Image 1 (cartoon, protein in one colour):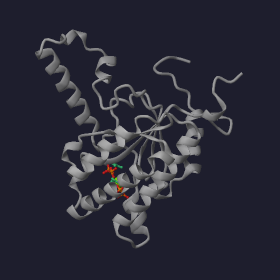
Image 2 (image 1 turned 90 degrees about the vertical axis):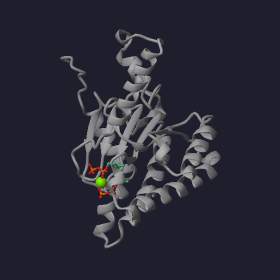
Image 3 (image 1 turned 120 degrees about the vertical axis):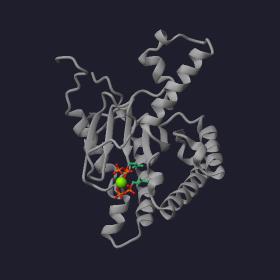
Image 4 (image 1 turned 120 degrees about the horizontal axis):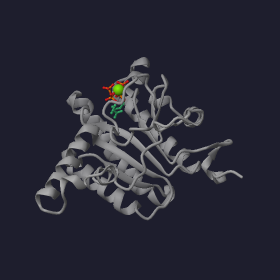
Length: 245
Ligand code: IPE
Ligand code: IPE
Ligand code: MG
């Protein structure tokens, strides 16, 4: 008999517990259509809505999405402002429709650099959605993998300096608990649409043994069918974790 409950399968395939996605390719999607980059971000936000609902329907437990990186501040002020405005609007709608969607929301990243309004919306979205037990969406917002590791290292060093622990007590588990993702299992599958073959500083610590899936499909065109393809590819992989199976 299968170890997987029916609802955690796509077709006859088991679904991973945690999938992480680099939502990339919005700008190129817009450019191809002669539209401003921000138009791509708008359609990208809709693609996210569809994927989050689909993730819920297949029984995925955690979905982490790279929304804005610590490096994305390098973009023009106009583009950054447009992305932030879209995020504010998106979070307002998300809070409004929360009871209907029943998705739990978490935020990974340094939110202190965001507008007070965005910070407040993120706080409300996280607090009010704590009660939902379905899929948990982790918005990686002003997130960078290296910044996250440095933050954890500083926290541990501070705890040592305060006499709460000793350097030799640091283990991988303990360090994981100092990440934004504390308590969330590592992603088994990291998906990057948009054609680039790199991590761009996404979940560096957590993805040590993740399976990667890259596709040229641009994020605004990435729908449930693409997610199914990624899961199918994942199920065809032989995960050895350094062993010799
Ligand atoms: C991803 O799409 C969205 C963000 C990084 C905020 P891009 O804006 O990077 O789109 P491309 O890669 O330029 O096509
Ligand atoms: C990664 O995409 C960040 C997000 C999707 C939020 P980028 O477009 O910023 O990555 P690079 O610049 O191609 O590495
Ligand atoms: Mg990009």
